[in-house]
Image (cartoon, rainbow, N blue to C red):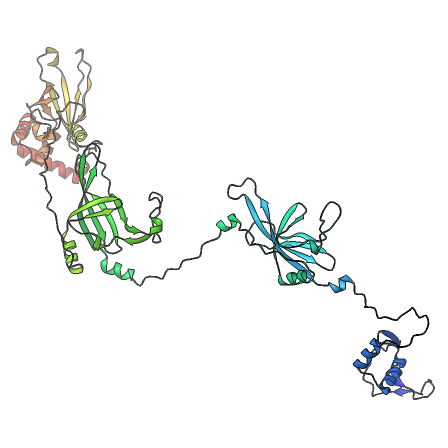
Length: 557
């Protein structure tokens, strides 16, 4: 029973008691191992005791006894006892011993205009314990090619006869053919070199792996860091805003047919060192009135040497290509300045520019050039005579501009006098007998001073009645095209003759509303017109005024 002792008493109930001094309660074992052999535990304890009692030999004594050869042998005389070396298998002797070679193979690329071949580096491992080989390609980030283990660990066939590659076949500068792909061995590590040289293999000189041209073209150049300038752009903008240097320049355009001199205005903005070129357009010059010749920008003065040979038409100018920009010191009055391939002669400047140069550049001398300012010949525009089509205003607008604008209208007058019409009755002044009995209604529209004529029907006259004249402004016979005069309310007096586009009409009657309206503006109407209307209508001035007041009171009531 575990944990109990009998002390030589028979193993019967009541003859044992518990041993309280025991501290180990694991499962007991019957066998123990000594020098690799399993023996009972009790026997091992006795053997270990005997070994402790005897004197233990030293390690030197044991090696001498092992190497000592017997001086006298028994048995047959021809048999000698010799010590044989122990056998060590290859998987133990070459365990974890690997030869490492570096190389590459070239892969052909089809249907690609950017590359013809790729150079793919590999690492070849040779395991000495079983003569197996493994080929691994190092992974390259963002290469787009499946990389990693190309050939798993195995014995690679050497030829068609069933031979396999051995480490004696490997050397630097040789080709290794594995499954149709030729790998070029270029280098190896230090352990591989030491192992092969110890086995008597003479290694060749290492080679360099060729550079992949496509991979080299994708390599980004090193960043060139430029120390920022200490110049304060914000201070320049705050102090020089709205301050502009203005120069007057001449540019001579050499043409095959003529030599033309054109005047320009060059403006230099001190806030951001930009330049703008504007042209002075002359009337009838035959050129398009473009707003600017050169938009506001910084104009480069000198380019860097590596950028001078680059075509200017495709060069996007930036601060990396420009060595120096134009500054106020480069603009000297009286000299020629070259801007964007053109030469401009600065012949004068404005007063602000002169004062600025006197304060900032007192050493610079301004030399204005007196230019011959020829007297401009003003050609008077001749307006052609009126041809009778349309109104005078429309015909005049066609002579003033290529795209005529509609004549301006008095909107306030149109709103105040809307639906106000003065009606008169007239007869035609003609030498023909058939025109004596014809009667016309002439309507004068106060909103736009237009006149319309309507012919009243006459039985058995043989003349078609109706609209005789559309609404239009009728000029007087004495008016000219330059200063036209049109018929107004003051010209419509009883008995007066109106000439309308070659036809003569004599006014014989009018509405009472005509007299009432004209008396409200009697200061603008001639007295002869008012008296003729009063006399014809039989209305005295006092009665007309009383009748008008009575009408107003009726309206208010």
